[in-house]
Amino acid sequence: MTSIVIPTYSIVPYFLHIQSIVSLMDLTHAKRFKNQIEYAPNLDSFHRNLMMQKELTDYALNLIRKQSIAPLEQLLLSRQIEPGILVTFHRHFYFRGSSAALNKERKGTKSYAEFHTRLTEFEDLEVKGQFSPEHFTCSSATNRLSGKATRFMLAIVEEVQAKSILLRPLIIGDRIYGGESDLFLYSKNEQRIFSEDIDEFSKMESIDAQKWDINRLKNIPEQQVKKMFAELLNEGNVPKDWGGEKSDLFTTHIHIKGVRASAAFLFKGPSKFHSLTLKDLGANGDQIVRLFEEPADIHIVQHCHYITAEITHHLDAFASRPYSTSYYCTLDGIDTLRILVGYGYI
Image 1 (spheres, rainbow, N blue to C red):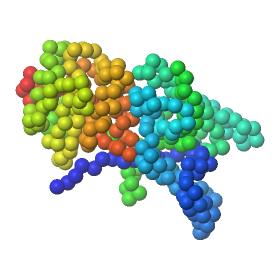
Image 2 (image 1 turned 120 degrees about the horizontal axis):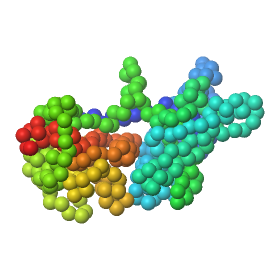
Image 3 (image 1 turned 180 degrees about the vertical axis):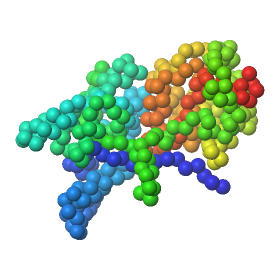
Image 4 (image 1 turned 180 degrees about the horizontal axis):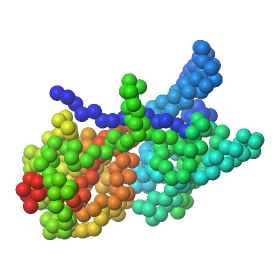
């Protein structure tokens, strides 16, 4: 039987702070890295730099896996954020000053570019920092680290205040899917799947089959929706709701494009009939934390109304942890209607 393959990614760095990453190595790794770089045979400086960047990036990803370095969102939800710890972060950033800082650097003047973003789900918390062009890895770094862009970051938390967090980046780059044997590498998010990818939902109505009115779900209790989905999945074990559950439904009777997988569901019914936000998912969003404690291949959030982007950001942060990757999926009110209508439940 074919097993589900959870996608993994590598990082293409545009900023790489060599000294900081080497400082994280134990003595054995540091000596091995030094010898490998110094005695690399028949390599000019350009290819030696490429090899060094790959070695350090691979080492950083392995370090994230081995030490279970958490995403910033997870630490904020669990209130474990503090200065001095390593974090990962993958979000839309606003970069400013890369070209100007590089020009000053070339003239011998130390200069820094800046980045910032705001996490509206944490009362508009600002995440910011600086980075030096001294550690750019390629000529396109100024373009890749300018304006608004989604980038991956491995960073050290330097300062935590009530309204802001200061990060010192070690790596800034792109998440890239595909292995060395693949002809093409791509940055499309492979962790996220949609309802159309799930075989058990194959009879769902087309998105343009009619004008979908989510108010049709307003009077259908959460428990009833959960039973409908359990029946679609041939899952007879439907647990009763209680305060300490990790998920509302766990099943191994789900298939993604013909391949069997396990899935953990979080259902949110019409008791809060509005767009789903982090505040609707328990104290400090702890329902997402508990959902990802389930050993599932796919983590799914279903809601009778719309689902805000902040929920998707957090699902992505948890699903893309290098030490615990999984797929994730959101089923909003329109997706839910299309499924339940397609299977004749409503």
